[in-house]
Structures are given as structure tokens and as C-alpha cells.
Figure 1 (cartoon, rainbow, N blue to C red):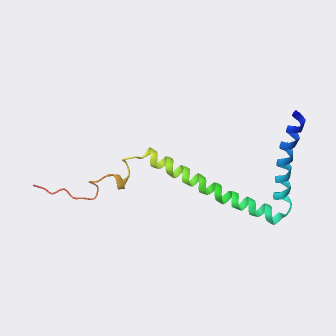
Figure 2 (figure 1 turned 135 degrees about the horizontal axis):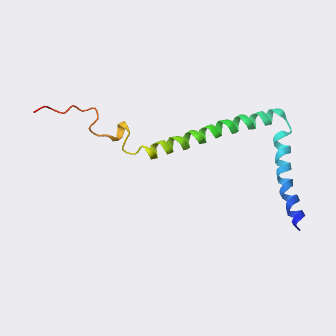
Figure 3 (figure 1 turned 90 degrees about the horizontal axis):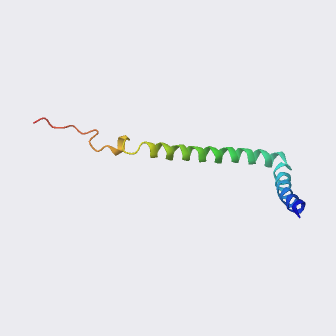
Length: 72
């Protein structure tokens, strides 16, 4: 039973490998799309992390910045 489960899991990866690697154009498209989506995911994650670490320190968050105080 264990070998059957292992074989069915291997069949899934083998079939995905055959679908992606069958033609060079599909493989190249898969790599380029993966790189683009991976870059977008990393960019989004780093941006959210930066915003989380800089709460109330950004220029937009400081209300008195850019206004002149009147001398009385």
C-alpha cells in the first residue's frame, strides 16, 4: 500500500514534468512567468514589511511636516 501511494505521488510529479518539459516553448514560458510572478510576490512582501516596520515614521504619516509654524 505504501508503494502504491508513493507511486501515485510520483505519477503526479512525473505528469507535471512531462507537461512542462515536453516542449521548449512551454518550459521557457513557465520559467519567465514564474520569475515574473515570483518577483511580484517578493516585491509585495518586502513593501508590506517595510510599511509595517515604519508605521508613523513615513513622510505621509507626520501631519506637521511641511507646514511652517508662525512666529508670535
